[in-house]
Amino acid sequence: MTRPDRLEQIAIVGGTGPQGRGLAARWSRAGYTVHVGSRSRERAEDVAARVRTRAGDDVDVRGATNLEVCARSEIVVVTLPYEAQRPTLPDLRAVVAGKLVCSVVNPMVFDEVGPKAMRVEAGSAAEECQELLPGARVVSAFQSVPAKRLWDVDHPVGCDVLICGDDPGAKHRVAHLAADIPGMWGVDCGPLRNSASIENVTPVLLFVNRRYRVHAGLRIDGIERDESTLHPPGSSDGARGGREPGG
Image 1 (cartoon, rainbow, N blue to C red):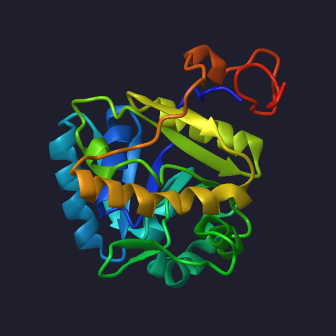
Image 2 (cartoon, one colour; image 1 turned 90 degrees about the vertical axis):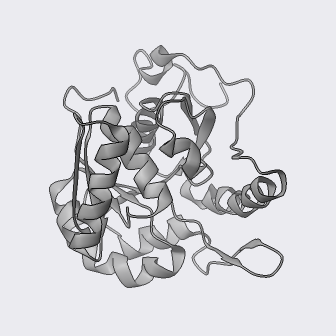
């Protein structure tokens, strides 16, 4: 799978939070039309205007309800708080059927000690997302990317994106979405069931960031970061680096 000649439109469900705003700013700068979604159209439009101010006057960022932005887009990115996932996603089932859905949801709570990962009956927030949207091609990614690094659009992000999913082509497309953001690279981390391990890293990173007053992300050592490896010669299944994993 190669990068499409026409950039798909991207919907960000629950896109008014820090992670959604940051991704909207970065992808709109990369040339995508980005639709910021919210329960409130007014809130979505206000945040879209804020993103345009941050990313530049020539970007295309629009705001509407979650249902409307999903209907208008080929790629759907879910940045909801975990507690809002189950109440929100079932209403989107029909309009996201057959589409790539990227889960950026982190199930966690905060107590007097700090952030803490939550147990999810489905195994992970991403697996629950797949259960709630059975017709979608769900991939998990971007959970461990600091929102403040995304929002700082004048500097490279400088961290990797850990990608999990059961659809090789969908994972490969998300790797392109990562590479379209300066200083970012997508790393294939296996099937969707591995998402729990990555989601559980986010509370650790948040604790580190609070403790040391930084915006730390993750970097995987030893990975070749060459744009040509996003288009493996002779490969039709989305394998990275021109060879099968483990080859």
